[in-house]
Image 1 (tube, rainbow, N blue to C red):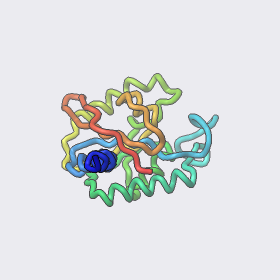
Image 2: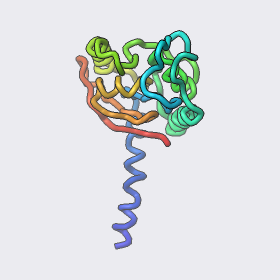
Image 3: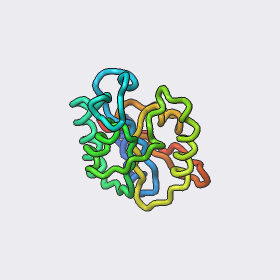
Image 4: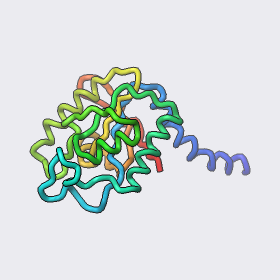
Length: 181
């Protein structure tokens, strides 16, 4: 009976280790939803991408969460081949706090919330890149919940991640979900 109780207690720890082991192998794509922002939904009226002061930005809690994500990637020795971000300041800041400066801006990762006219073009571009990814390290993409949902059909909380396994020819599979608290 004690052995069964120990097995049940050990299962959550093992389940949490699995996504990290997968990422240590490389060759995957990690979609990260930006961390928590100041209160609000969508973008403020009249926001401009080139002016962060007009956008909803990361809260102090969101900044600390982004740093914890980066620390976990370092602790679990996850190889990163490339880092891309949506042009929205909350995504660029999440990427920078987690992984350091230098995320390349990729407009295909842009926010789809309230922009249904962009959906198919962005999904096609993302699918082609993700499905055809063959890197030795992992491709990390920082984006928005609406974009993750449209692409992978997975709803993420702020700062959560989904790991995708490229299958070629624009196809991919959801391999795991991951969060760092």
